[in-house]
Length: 158
Image (cartoon, rainbow, N blue to C red; front, side, top):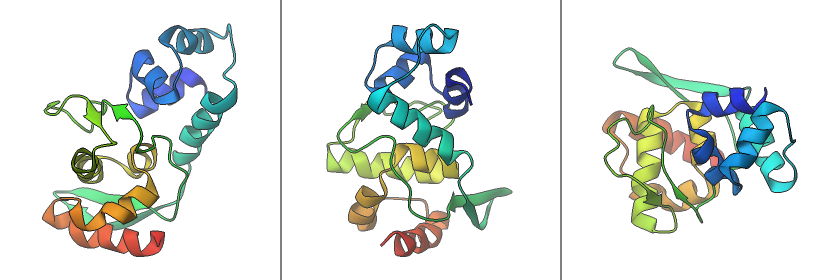
């Protein structure tokens, strides 16, 4: 996938992708226009994003006609718990909480719950660090229909 396709698949703006990757919005614009090529850590994170869209998933039930789809196994996180983030609209459609500081344990737990409840398996792999999820698990306030599927995911991640 090209950078613009990846960005659209994640559901973020150029500025939000730049924030995720630790670069500037003009850098993302230049990549999308083909004037420059991502390098270093930004290129590695873009590769991780591309991988999640082809990663194996597990359907762990259904809720309100929508499959509960979770990653099959462990993944390399794109967004680590040392960031402040804005979730894309398809996950945080209100957006009720605004910018979230993942360094704050309570904010990380509520953010992870929202991604697990509203996101796809790819979203989970982009926005959630698996080690941080395992460590936080008892504190993550997921919806009742997600408790068992996520508990099963935690077992696979340990």
